[in-house]
Amino acid sequence: MNPTELANQATAAAHRALELAEQARRMAEAAAPVAAAAEPFLYLLTIFLLACFVGYHVVWNVTPALHSPLMGVTNAISSVIVVGAILAAGTADGVAARIFGFLAVTLAAVNIFGGFMVTRRMLAMFKKKGS
Amino acid sequence: MGHTLSTLAYLVASVLFILALRGLSHPETSRQGNLFGMIGMGIAIVATLFTKGMGFGGIVLIIAGLGIGGTVGTIVAQRIQMTALPQLVAAFHSLVGMAAVFVAAAAFYAPESFGIGTRGHIKAASLVEMSLGLAIGAITFSGSVIAFAKLAGKMSGAPITFNGQHWLNLGLGLLLLLLVIIFVATGSGVLFWLIAILSFALGFLLIIPIGGADMPVVVSMLNSYSGWAAAGIGFTIGNLLLIVTGALVGASGAILSYIMCKGMNRSIINVLLGGFGSEGGTAAAGADAGDRPPVKAGSPEDAAYMMKNAQKIIVVPGYGMAVAQAQQVLREMADLLKKEGAEIKYAIHPVAGRMPGHMNVLLAEANVPYDEVFELEEINPEFADADVAFVIGANDVTNPAAKTDKSSAIYGMPILDVERAKTVFFIKRGMSSGYAGVENELFYRPNTMMLFGDAKKVTQEIVQALQR
Image 1 (cartoon, chains in turn yellow, red):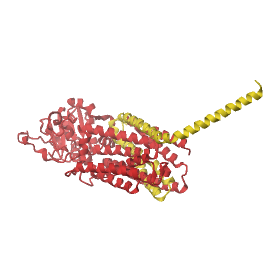
Image 2 (cartoon, rainbow over the protein chains, first blue to last red):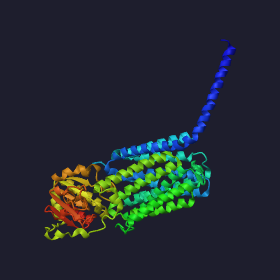
Image 3 (cartoon, rainbow over the protein chains, first blue to last red):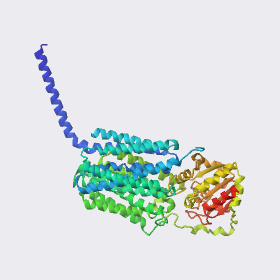
Image 4 (cartoon, one colour):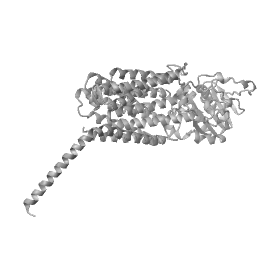
């Protein structure tokens, strides 16, 4: 096989690859709206259900003596809603959304600091015999 | 921060939150768990602050909010008395609910920031998720406000019932569903606020018929709701961390509600329909009151003398102990008795107090070691070889009628078998029946001695007698 022939074959293969890539792109484009509508939700739902199972198993292992601190911790971490509040206060267009974001950040912050602090206070009191 | 990096940070935060809950499986690991929770929250907040498009003004606004809220939260958490813990938790739940409402509103007015469409043209699926987060958040808010008021004594703990209450709630629930459907179809701002107002009303109406001593279930349930609200908002704005955490908290609250209901042998429906305990003490004077043997009342000195000679004493604390603030002096009494050679154990019923685990925290605060405190299943076989059962501020949870009397309102409820102890001391202010409105036949048993008076005062007198 001479070099010219080889080069021609390589060029042809490259063209074919490009064509295929273009086809794949068009297919992906056509499929995107369908996937975008259904997939993220199913994906989030999957994670949600798995997290419910994890929560179920972890919480059954919590000793009943610590059920009050459990409420304190869950109360604090449920304020992770602050993430949504920060996005609103920091990136939203429009005064209304920013104000709502600010109010939500403030309320969630009361909970985060208050929840973790009060839990810490509770847990510090649980002592063993003789300690 | 790039999308991949923030997603990774959220994943780390989720794992840390799971570890925070996992730490609570034992008091020794719990403090570390709480620390994991704080770190997780810190990572989540910092990662979000680095989101693309975050301006300087926005950051100032956020820091201001965090500063104000953080200061208030820290001060409240430092100052709160442990007996007031249930109402504090209820108040905190209401804030999560309100924050969910505000975030839903922000997402509605600036959908572009959350990638769910443009103003007035939000995707239908997002509107469904948004109304879920909004409605659950609003119900959590107003429900928790009522729970707070009842627990803090700012309103009567008695159930508030009226004719057609359940039909009204059902009707409002259906109306809410209808409003959500119209909201999703039209995307109207008026509908958004109508849903919010109706949900506030519904949360209020759902909690008012529930009596004070059923509050452990209500607080657990609102805990669960606050989680579902966070998850709902997570679906709306497509945030993994919110969804995972919401699911964890939702599951936790649901399990606690289940444990509390089982501790009373009542279904969650029965608790939620409310009206329980409305009879107060009217059922106390039963038809057969005439042929009761007389009640044996004793003095603190008698009790001190008998306990001095006891080998094994099991203390059964209830909400009355918390009300009288008697936990500290109770521990002093236990210390003196230990010096006399007695073995002291504490028996905790699952629904003692006004929130799950309430008694354990109060005893821990009074420096009672946690390895002297036992759950119902662990301690029940031990009453038979106890010399004294010392019941302080508990009533219904010791009533043997729960085991024998099928007609009793508390039949089937697991109880502490205090009647098997050689002697039972009951500290009580009077002969009134407990929350369930059922008379406790234990008061009339020959091995029971009533110590009438305030829990703290009586225990103090026992301590003085022991010191003599």
